[in-house]
Image 1 (cartoon, rainbow, N blue to C red):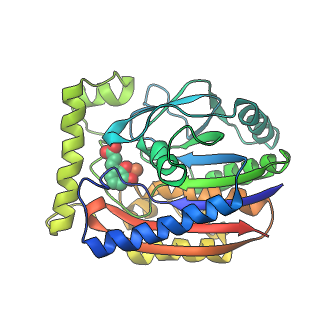
Image 2 (tube, protein in one colour):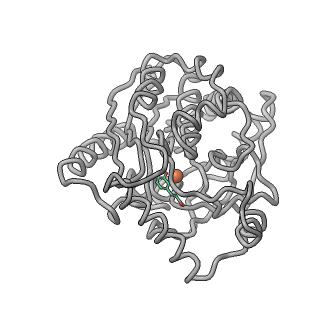
Length: 312
Ligand SMILES: O=C(O)/C=C/c1cccc(O)c1O
Ligand SMILES: [Fe+2]
């Protein structure tokens, strides 16, 4: 088995609230490099770790993480819509391998996913149905969140299980790094919002447009420097990238949930996808970071990072 990994921040604001052209150009270059890396690697299977933003997972039942044997994307913010090409056989085999290794995995035979999954598939592969994929949802917003060491354990179990597949496997992380977008919070939410977060009744087109517009406005406020939300934290973001670069993921085991949110914002826990993906790669053997890009992009409400790593 050969393995590689790509970490890629996502933002639904890309193309909607854009930063200066030179920033877009630098990001485009980093993404083009990641795309070339993926083409060169030629994955037979992609294990995609991504969060959800109350489009597929709700408080009625909110697992800390969940692996899909089938999935479809809703197409929020103009991202890809429709079924993902889930490799059901590999998905079941990974699920068994993870459970055998003592990590209590939830599975979904009909996962609903949003831009968190669709954007990296669109960006890296040109569509959501172009490559055999096993989607793995990692909760990064719905508190209470469990200790991050459990996410590293999940990643390590998935990596070890993937090593039994005899395939070229690419682990992809979607999300982070530090960012604090206006994602709703259940604690103290008015009854109408609480019901939506718990039951997940499909919003009307009008409601969806309103909530997407709220995020767009938040991006404009960040870009203008008038946002009252937590700023992007480049020092924290680069600290995580340093740990990933030197393969010292065990350090995150001592990070507390509250400290991560205080440093990186309400959605900083999307970095759990990075921790899972690189722990998965590390479980297959040592790796080398081939590329690393980082830039804070307030207009996208994202500490925006792109990294590629090759198993040795
Ligand atoms: O409100 C949402 O659905 C998501 C917003 C958002 C904004 C910026 C970066 C992200 O990772 C997001 O998920
Ligand atoms: Fe997100």
